[in-house]
Image 1 (cartoon, one colour):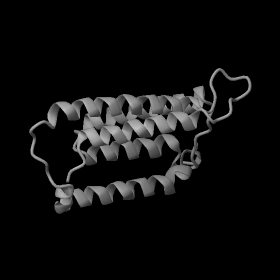
Image 2 (cartoon, rainbow, N blue to C red; image 1 turned 135 degrees about the horizontal axis):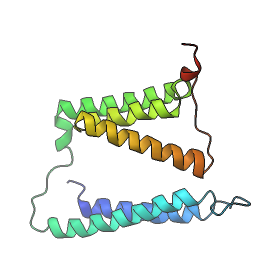
Image 3 (cartoon, rainbow, N blue to C red; image 1 turned 180 degrees about the horizontal axis):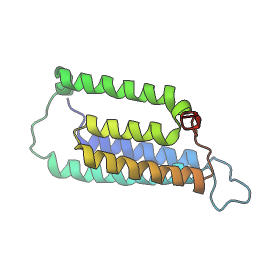
Image 4 (cartoon, one colour; image 1 turned 60 degrees about the vertical axis):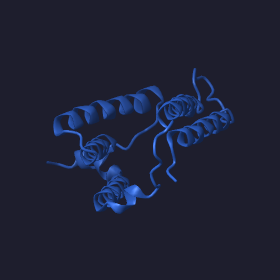
Length: 157
């Protein structure tokens, strides 16, 4: 039996609630307006919203809809190739982020993932660029989390 939107929504909702409870356990950072719990709390809130949305969508669309088997996707070699490519991209990111730096490695990863999912090249590049800049700003400037600068750009060209 296929895991429907309602079931996935309930799991997402429960995961968001659990993440919210876990984030409350983080200790605050002295002298900061926000602490270690800020980002997990925001993500938990988004997970709760998505969970509720999935439940509502599932209730609206699953009435009278035929159930598909849970393994329909597993019969397509193209799906397995994309899954393998995703795993390789993440592994490549992990292995190269210290040398390339966060900005370049993340730009390549996000753009490659978007291309893998069928996004056209120009929107993939633009969205990847905006995403990396926003994450760099959020973590590097607002949260003061040091991100890898990379040795690649320090090479004497």
